[in-house]
Image (cartoon, rainbow, N blue to C red; front, side, top):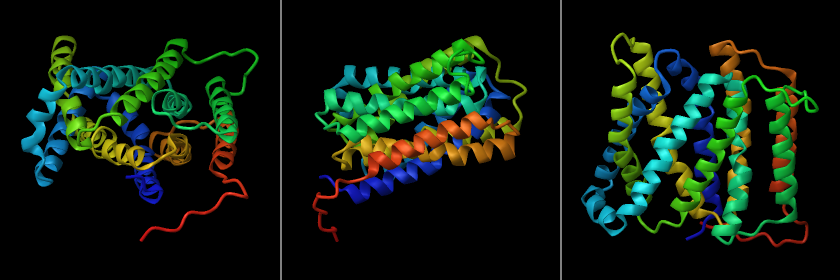
Length: 301
């Protein structure tokens, strides 16, 4: 059942929570390697999602859900969280968060196109304009305003951040077509990838000497970036009839994130970042505007 009001509420809630995680990423990466961060945060996410499923009385349906499509859920788990977060955390490890985050946010452009191809969503002319402005803003941020030279702080970091957008958008397109309960679907993805991430972490890094600050930060990541917020965003995507309208809400988040990164982490916010975000916001406003001759639907009660 589509309900654009609920989709907007769920989408905005997810965006506000995601606004805080760039800071948590950088704090955690100062104590852990990317694979350690993934493994520890995944443990927290599995516990939280399992608790939610238990409270909702859905936990007994977990095994039957997996048995119906085992290969499908294994694929989802390998894409996200395993590969996606390894790529994303490494990008954050190589780049300042104020650069890595806007680059990762360009996945909304990819999602708009993929939703049209695989979900049959309509792309309006204003969606194309919004996508172009948003992507141009991301390029301005990534190059720090040096558009002609196209010089980046870390080419590998930039490449990984852009690769993460393809993985993230692809995961959500696959998950949106999943008829199973979203709580169980996300829980299965994390459960199936957890043994692999724990094994890789155990083989490549030591868990000794990590202070409580690192454990607290990674727990926050597991709770709000990789746990509860997934549920909010997936609910938004299932309620909406226009994936691009909801996905472009994520461009609100960098403004909050920049404030947190500057005040908590102490990162320098370049003027080019603010200019790039201005292009993104203009695109967002254009995308959200409705035609003057469109009829407003009656408000649901």
